[in-house]
Length: 125
Image (cartoon, rainbow, N blue to C red):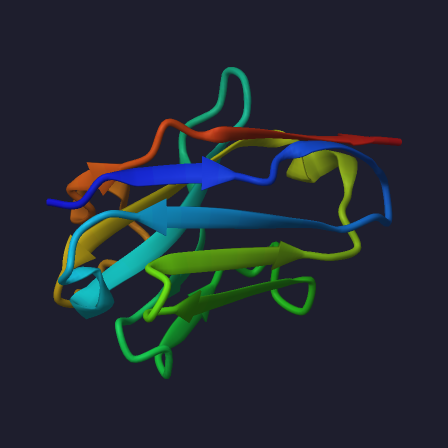
């Protein structure tokens, strides 16, 4: 398994942007699928985006399509989540997660074995 550390969260006004980073340890991270999930208070953890090791296969939740972009730099062992046009409903703790290989169940938290500690994103109206 790899160790994951998220950063880049903060407080932003509606309509603003943030870029989250997920830094990973481990030489084989480039072979892992990485997902971003979020969890608001009192809510279940929900899927946001996922990217396969090659960067070619990408998935987004409908709620963030057209606003969020996931990308990865395998040379640096970092996955990014660029978030634009943020809304108050995007407020949550954002987690990155990873696992070897690829599954069609990429939107399920149970598909990922390694998780970061999370970073808080707060969008004010």
